[in-house]
Image (tube, rainbow, N blue to C red):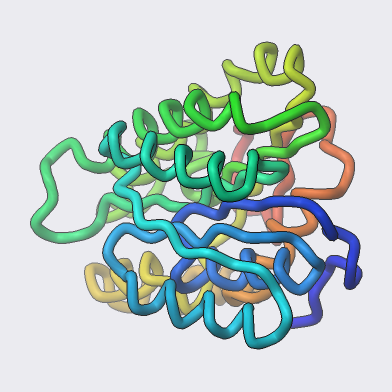
Length: 254
C-alpha cells in the first residue's frame, strides 16, 4: 500500500500509536515514520515484535522507540508518558488503536476496562503532552460504531458494546480538547482482513468473515485501513468528527 503521507510531511512531529507492534498499528506507525515523524511503538506483551519494528524503521533512516505499557494499568500508562516526555518532549499525534476483549483468560469485564475506561484514562493522561494543533485519532469498527442500530454476531457483541461506550466517552471530551487546540477524529472501518479480531471471529463463527466480505463486496486489508488512519491524522476533521472507511450501506445510523 502506498503511503498516503508525503515524504517529509511529518518532519519534526512526534507520534504514538497504541497497540502498534503488529497489524494495523504497525502499518500506521510505519507510515508516520516514513513521512518523517519520530514514532513511539506501544506494546503490551509483544516486545520482540516491537523492537524488530523499531530496528526496521531505524534502518530505513527513521526515528523510533518501543515502549511497553498495559493500558488498563494507570501506573504503566503514566510511566510510558513520563518516558515520552523525557525523551521526546511531548506528542503531536496520538492514535488510539489498541483494543481487545475476545482474548481468552481475561477478566469478565476486560472489554469494558480496555475499550472504554482505559481509553478515557489514556487520553486524559496524554493531554498535557499534546499541544495546540495536535491530533488524536480513535480507531473503531463499523460493527461497534453502529451497534445500537445494527445487529451484530453474538461473539463480538461485548467488544462492540464496549468500543461504542469508549467512543461515546471520548466524544464527550471534545469541548475540552477543542479548548486546548487538540483535534479529535474517530476512524471506523468494516471488518479488516488479516487482523487478530477477524481471525478470532472466524474461529468462533466459521464463515463470518467470508459472509461479511460477500455482503460488502470487499473488505479492506490491514495496510489499506492503516493508510486511512494515517490520513485522518493530518487531513481536515469532518464536521461530525467521524471518518467512515468502506461501505456502510448494510449499517443503520450511529
